Image (cartoon, rainbow, N blue to C red; front, side, top):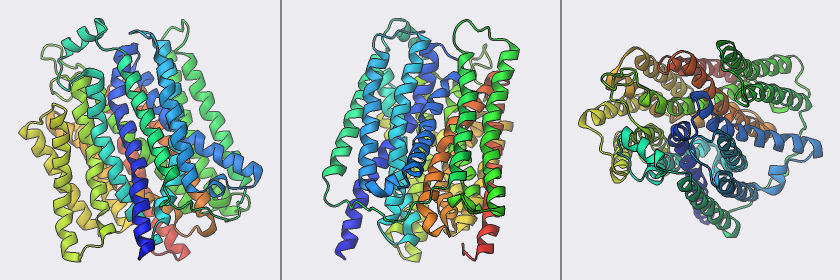
Length: 559
């Protein structure tokens, strides 16, 4: 019994880290359109915020794997999950503090300063990579393995609370309010009433919170170190493949970056080359996965955890899931602020054009959708009776929805009755999905992938609030996918579980590649049609659910 108490205490401490991830990640949805306006950059460049942030996840996890392979010792297992999280928090604090000198004295239109901002965010992301690598298996290890996904859902629910209030807090810090007119905002920027000083102060505060969390973890006696003596298998073939993939991605984005520097004339040819290189990076990721799957099936030696097809397919699923989760909201700001009808000042959805401050509540609502699903997914952690569980499946989503509305009201935004009704209907659809899924990860993925596809298609082919809330429903339908994918991907891996987890964390890379790709498609075509990217992402997730079930059945792993 005492051990159970200790685990609960440890889990309570652990979820604070998940809160920070959500707060910062969701804040990017407000920060991206602000950077676009302030630094005078295009949609693709603004999406480099996500590229730097989520790319750091990949680089951090890859470095851990490469270094561990070189010294033939698993660094994470050697340090223990507790130390890994502490070191990650300290690294994120460093990145947050770097934001101050990076933007010191910067003025509107100084595009070069934007790239220093990206460096600071990259360092923050590196720290998050360490934290993710340690925190996810840490949460699973704090109790019975079969209930590990439920603890991840609980942590994810706290993470989503951070995503809900993050955009509101950042909007209040940057703009002073969530309700300022476009004309007022332009004037405020022109008169230097809104400067990067507010960004500096925000990140100094965030850095201080990271230090406090690190101290909390370091000095807490309730948190077990959770070290492991599991022998490390180098997996040289997997390492070499990942290194080659990294070089391809660096080469593609390096060239793209070069076209934004100096006096390069932006012609149709240059735009086409940029788009082609983005697709090359995407194809490189997909191709690497299929090469690993094919090669390992013929000769598994040297591939380590990658010899398991459920993991390889899961790596691409994590890549796709993170990509679609991030890209829906990252491009949402541009969708809502783009002027499609100059006479009536309407955006492509036929709704009034919003400014950077007005976007924040809808970003909050999107991430709040993820909070709703994860709160529901965490219900099982508390072992309710069957009848109570059914009642909670209906009650908890609307309690979470109420929290979202209250948080936005505190930030100065009151949604209209029509907006509340539209989202309430979306929540009802999600609840129906939960009842149909019956806690089965395969069935859950199938149902919510289909719902995600339908939501994006409705958003593409309709207008008004129907289209807007169809896009926003993507958060609701993505909410429960991470623990399902993670659980199915490491099922049956045995001694390769730790290594497989590291490979999955690398694939958060999807948040670095898919949003800029959609951003470039938006620059070339239009912002609404660019959401076909999200449709294709949900299509793969549906395929993954079907394919992985067959793979696990063949291995005798029941799901």
